[in-house]
Image (cartoon, rainbow over all chains, first blue to last red; front, side, top):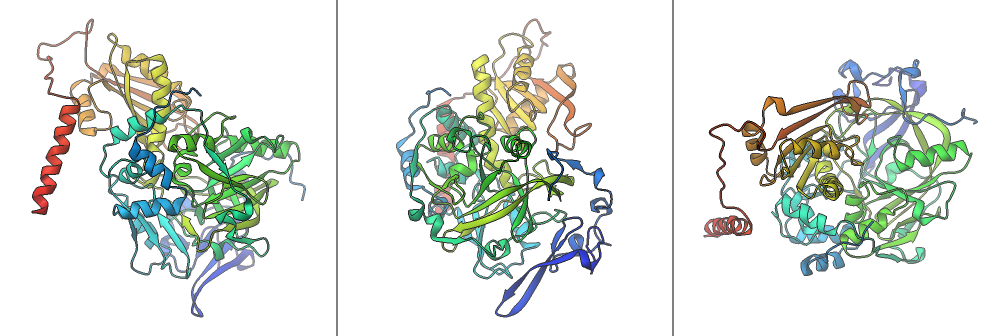
Length: 79
Length: 494
């Protein structure tokens, strides 16, 4: 499995939560630590299939400078 | 603020006194057929989105909808559309379903501008919101039926929360406590990002905390008093309290208690998420389908860590659908966008009759006013652009005569069709503009438009066939219109 938005490899993905009813797993939610995308495996391909998603919505975490800062940090992060 | 509020009617007072929280409001809506529970089991996506869009088609009468069978979230409840129609707003203000938007506008105007806060304190141990408290192993997915609002959103959002914060330099100053609505993206079981417009109070507090190495503690309130949901987004000055404002607009007290991290929160809210800014950390946020009906892009946005959660038993996640209008967002903030623009304009120009800024938070505004002399409407439009909301939001202004109801688009189209001359259109290039307005030339800057659709008068050249028909108007005709509807209902029921 890769990220549907930035194609990050599995090692960058985190299993977030599973929706369970009477012991049956209904869906699993994931989060990409590289581009911050969150998704659920029960969603439609338009949201979670890299090939089906509109290319305009892809995110390139290797070039973060292309994304604006809403409020620039006052100082470099210390931790 | 001045103390010029009128006293509210007995009907409004009765409603105000019985509503203390979201649950009270849902009960009132239910009594009038304005609150339903969705009967079938649904998936979080895309079902919630589809139902919300379908319900939004009817801005006048759509009901609030409760979902309690969301697959994978057994036992969790979510409600959409609480402020999704003008009938719901009418009931909150003590008016019957079907009240015209213009009547609701004048009711809000009448309540606007008082300075008598009605706040009551409740001990934390007695506050319903503290029925349950979680301080470790916090997992938002266990607490809220989170879902993707629009298909290309960057994640799951909390879209209708009231966020409380205080100036990090003056954490004991109630007057410098801010309550606002911001978009919140969940980034993990106990992390979220919060997007604030750089000019808003929250952004000021974030910059202050980071520049001075101070903690910024916030409380995210979900499932709020219906007046707080409506009025927390209204621009009040930095040293005015949104709680005080909402309570006086409602005409009844709002009960407050203290959160675990020392902020004033609603005692009868459904849930409060206490969190702290992670100073100088940023995370990629967005896109999110925003109120102009387009996606705002991906940005680096401040991140918060959740420290505790309190909630009522069996809490209700109050959420909202936002996207390409009409949506609940337009109904929720529409009238409160109109009211301050009207009040500020009226101070300069008593000729102003009404302001309709319902569309996309006022990106288009329609102002009804009486021309003092030819060309006067353009001067009024310029003044509107310099009101606090007008500075950024009023992009397209349509000026109409005092006898045109700006909330009745049939009448506005008459004005555009018959009053407008192409030479009465003014374009103001390179003006400030809302960051996420897709019409901007560059984010934050673009062109404004004024259409003067008022009648011609000397020294304008007035054509030979321009004498207006003046049909009968006023309260007698308003009453007759209601009487026609009543006769129709009676005919239906026979």
